[in-house]
Amino acid sequence: MPTVGVKRDLLFKALGRSYTDEEFDELCFEFGLELDEITSEKEIISREQGDTKASGASDVILYKIDVPANRYDLLCLEGLVRGLQVFKNKLEVPRYKRVSPLSGEPQKLIITKETEAVRPHAVAAVLRNITFTQERYDSFIELQEKLHQNICRKRSLVAIGTHDLDTISGPFTYTAKRPGDISFKPLNQTKEYTATQLMSLYKTDSHLRHYLHIIEDKPLYPVIYDSNGVVLSMPPIINGDHSKISLKTKNVFIECTATDQTKAKTVLDMMVTMFSEYCAQPFTYVTLTFFFPPSPDSESTEKIAHLLTRMCLLSQATGAGDEIEVEIPPTRSDIIHACDIMEDAAIAYGFNNITRTTPRTYTVANQFPLNKLTELLRQDLAAAGFTEALNFALCSQEDIAEKLGKKISEMRAVHISNPKTAEFQVARTTLLPGLLKTIAANRKMPLPLKLFEISDVVLKDETKDVGARNSRRFCAVYYNKSPGFEVIHGLLDRTMQLLEVKPARGEGYHIQTADDSTFFPGRCADIFVRGKNVGRLGVLHPDVINRFELTMPCSALEMDIEPFL
Image (cartoon, rainbow, N blue to C red; front, side):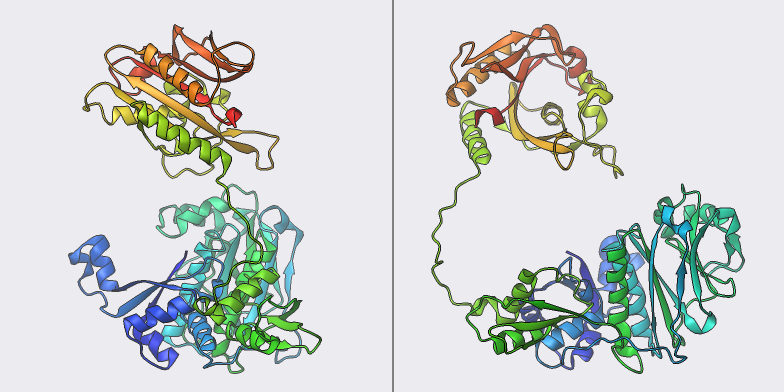
């Protein structure tokens, strides 16, 4: 869940009253939010960087509030206050509407076909006659950053640009050009750079370098010009210095370029609706209207309409039976189905106020069969003297390939596209490396070490809609001064006994000699159940043991348990 930090005194001033910490925590709970932390800028810096760095930082109390990930309208002070005020019946639901420009002619944004290969979508709007204060300006900038990190997915899906409309003139053109053909003075710089030079300049910038990869390999870079050829921005990297906004800005031109048009419209709606209240004519923006079936609650339609209105969903009973007309503002992009309307009605009514009743339909839940089998096996394997381990589902390529004497190209591994660390490059295709690393981390423990794990591995599967599938595996290892193959073989026999599979060919189970580079030659066997190969056991190859920084022999067993359901 995203966390919004707001200054307590500024929040209370906007709400029109003060609360104790407990009272505000309760208000957040009623509204479906959570007051996560009460802190200050000084306390945060002191905790993260030390007391020396914190000297001189602000002592102003900050409320850290967790908001739902799909409630983008609550990511700033303005939206948070508006939602709470409407919820407490202290404010009417704003009506957003589109107004015509003073000149009578609407501004134009021309999108050329060159943008199709790099960033094909763009939307724009204007906030007219807005009044900024330092607090409003800071909130305006902070909301952009929150949206960039949230719905915009670090600018990869949507990038927001804001400009002083009085310094530029339309119509505006959104196009794409070769990096060498784009030249302008970027925000807070003193001279002009080409796009190529900018990419080199920002490689060392702690903030902007994280966004360079989005377009740096593209033959064309997106750029927005005004009618005089002035560069407004080179999305998603940087705005031009010419049109930068300030506290004195009265008319703000907001543009959103994107690879996803729906998200671009959502982001633009958030920016406009949150700060249109500061315009000379407040809340001047377009509204959307939908018709939904009524919530299946025993309350009257008028009562339900009132509850929905408290949640910023302006509603009224139509008079046609139990039908309610609900107006969805552009701030509520999370409303995509009738059930979302019902959820808001329940929140406004108060979950604690709903009378407990016996459901009309009586059903009995059952445990998921695969999980039930897993839990039963875990108990009996622990009773057999083995200790359960739980390891990460992600691992390095080396763990599942080179260390086991295999090639990564031969593995049906799902790769992480942008791994943050070498330890988490792929989804594991076998449980064995995790158990061997667990033994390596516990080598000082008394011998023998007997470990097992029952968890999922991930395998590529072109027949699945996502291109991969989970497979539930059981793996066990025995580590001692002698290989202990008989111990692992005995554990296999006990497992088959628990699964009620008899040792016999055909309808039972048997093992058959196999060759595998992970295991010692002549000390490896496949496990067959009812004629199907379900796993493998054997003594690990000395090279494999050494690669995991172990010094003693080890035998292992790994098998798929899904065929036993």
